[in-house]
Image 1: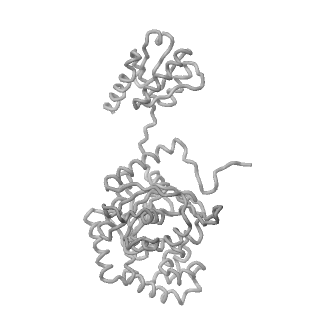
Image 2: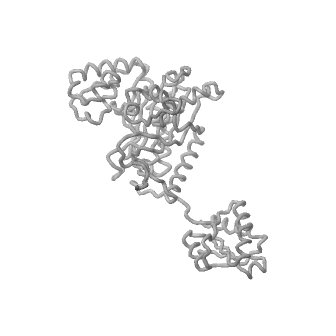
Image 3: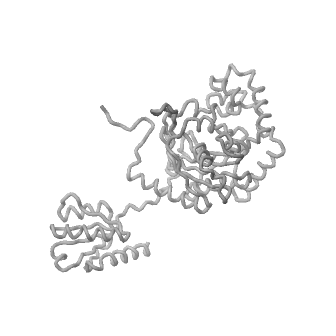
Length: 429
């Protein structure tokens, strides 16, 4: 039997994990600057959270969810997206009662979707997302978009394209919905099976169909922008004005509808224009979802957010040939020769680590030459050498692997001297 990772999943090995850690730490720093706080929700939820929160007519609910029954016969689903889970937590924990409003949250979470695996789209995917709950100020929409753009720009991406649209309020959507049904009804039998169902359930999603995108009726379909009432138009104009004030370029696309049922007013996607990125260009997407909190049993609470695939973010960095700075060098490697020196080294290494110094040693009983080779492989900045003579004199030889300089350091002063040398190295960088 061949033991392999399940289809649609990958292992993130140590050499790659450092890239992930850098990207995640950068994003956390940006979220802190924007005064967002982290939330962590369960890996699985009651299935109703997603069927009600995401929408019965979506591909996620109809085709892509990993759903199972527990021993009590309850239907549970592995989390396919983040907004419904965060909204459920918001309602259950009464975060709408917090003194500071709106509630601004971010998360890093693994999502699970049963779809055909392809580059950048796996069945287990890692996502960063934000949600702002408790404000219908268009400035919040602009801030959320700005945060996403800032993440990409501060990581070095340049080939970015922001596409926005307005889906309008309930009245606007109802009028547009009726116009879409009237427009597509004569062509219903020409559409794919999914769109024939969508036409009655959620006709807006017909515009999002990948199978029927070249159908002539798509090009002449009524635009949502034609059906925005005055309030919705004013809202959209304010969002665009705020983005312009922040110097954020955007393109308005009336056909951008997003794939989830809960969106209204602002919808947006950020895409990569980098050569070689691939046919699927979307990096992140989101929008406003006033009404979702009520659907999950909470009070009338407006919300907006986005989801950003971390795999696709790393792909975009590779496409633009942006190297992620990761410190591959080990601070110190301890070379100990002789039983007594090896025993003493255990205590010294412990003290160094407790004092914030990165250090490792040999665990393969190698001779001194082999230990130095190991230090080279770890790209150690310094090697600490303790043999019988050094132990007798209560000193450690501290050797710089860059310059070859070697000095004797009293054992009692070792931690202080290593700190000093490492700081000198940082100052000289």
